[in-house]
Length: 330
Image (cartoon, rainbow, N blue to C red; front, side):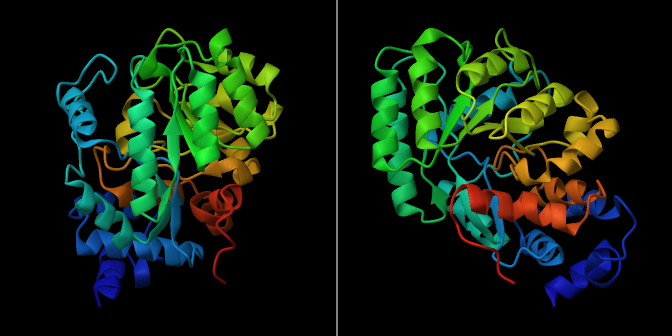
């Protein structure tokens, strides 16, 4: 009943006859994490044929005291944020997990990252424990350019880490610096993906932009790099990396949303290339740290007009293949 009522509200039977862009605007009015938003997300998955649900490669779970500091930084519109940024899903950890489950997200990550040396050991220990108690979570780990980094990254891989997070902007490090070279090599050899915030949005850093990562890829062309946020605002340059290196992928985090379009609009001239590389684009959202409802991220992708097959690949099949989750339901 909720699904049928929601479909009428969003335009047409199950929302399928709504005008282009209408649903993405209307879902902004849904209570975040409420029953109607959960119905909207599940309806989106049904509409694109993602019978198993969605796979979100860019969600944030981390130790409570670290996450609270991250939220405080966003609340203060710190220099790496540069603008007001309300946290939509500011809830206890178990409630945030319950929201993703209600949305039908079959797999997600615990993207966490250090901002200084000496943090990684306990962050990775926490992340391993989290993945052990939350079966939907892909075991996530991180690293920092510091002595011993190759050793602890190798240990995390041996322990079963399935994805790593690198945050070049927050960490303020050059990903091409020599101490990280064996780490990139190890991850490339192991075939473990790395989700890297290396674009210059929302605020540029000393080592953001495509240049440093291109240098890394020149030495490690088989590295499974997932460029977070579609590389915003250097969308075209990171699409060039996708063209040049067959293991480079992009995640959709925040792209095309009303919030991001204000400061980093996606160039519509790049839509043909985005469509052409549809097998290397993965759903990412930044949950819970988005300043808008989860359903908005999904519907703005539908607004691109690239079709249900592209959406199904992005929102499920590509990540399911990358992480060995099995085929989608027919």
